Image (cartoon, rainbow, N blue to C red; front, side, top):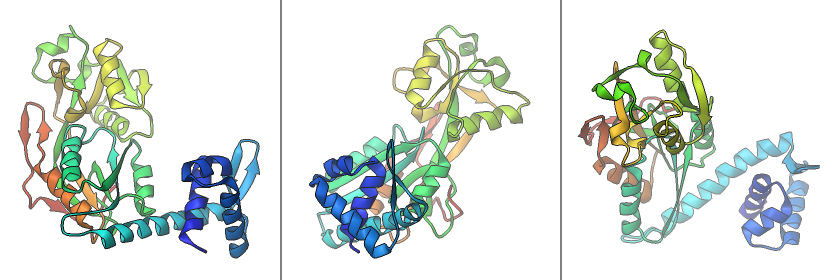
Length: 307
């Protein structure tokens, strides 16, 4: 077995067909088919079932692919570390963000990282579901993650960057805009997020703690969409302050009582130069409360459990 076979199997599982995987990998289709057949022969099991909609991993295939993903990512990090010089880093850094966090801070930190390591490839994705973030972390896919803290001990090291206060976004002319802070009983209906989203979980918990139940007018999958729909009068929405796009601040109010979450950078133990540099750049960013900002002190770290 080889890492190339692992990579081919992961591509087939991701794309659902040998043809699509070959296109992504930029190799000939027969080469992918041959590698998969050889891998199944070496393992003595069938990794994929053929269905009308494409190739689907078998039970044994799913178990194998979980470990293959760990092996491929470990090899990627090893190559990047080996190629790292005093002023150069070659390889890929994978960053995951819990949706709604770091929307204003992460771009600046990543730009600074690219200036320091111009040959470094950076992949960033938002994930609304904290359970999926945990799965990716356990699979060794993520090098650094931004999440509403704490981190699972031994899996990642948690570094507290600051706190994000949650705010409501209101349509122009809403009576609550006359107040400095808004009571939750004044707000409905809600533009909400998918039920598996951590942001929707915050809203539900806050309303429940105040003896309220949300009246839902719509569900969306992105913070920018929720803000846009609220601004246009469909309802109100509830997001971290930094997730509000510039130009909409006049339609934002904090709630009473205040709601906030810690923002934690979860970094793999024994992090390489890219993760270490990105963490330092994130520390230099400003983390917001509504109408107030601050930078978390460098000593504010946490090794308590993440996700």
